[in-house]
Length: 118
Image (cartoon, rainbow, N blue to C red; front, side):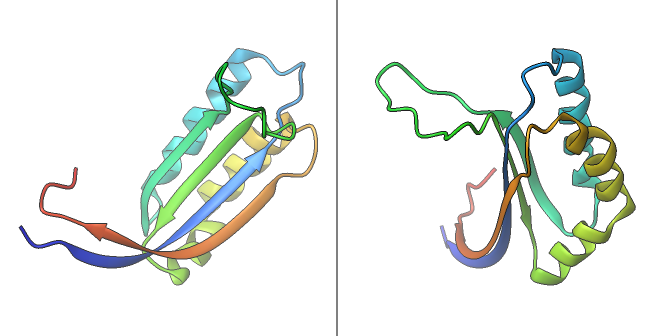
């Protein structure tokens, strides 16, 4: 088995949803975010609610949800940011639910991919 290393871009968004937001609104936001996988250059996309287990300290600082997008390159990040699907999902499905401005971080990382990778 030969493992190889590839360079990817990770786009992470941390955000706090307003307390009055319904489960239906959150579900629509999640579905809209997950549909962004169709944007060229997106390898994976995840969105979920943060949690704290009984044995863990609460380090969330009010953050209720996280979005993670893995992309093939910095150019793909630019395509993603400007893509009409992303702009629409952000403006119509995400921003209206927020209690405040989100925090976003982008970074380049190396990933080891083996033959048995899913």
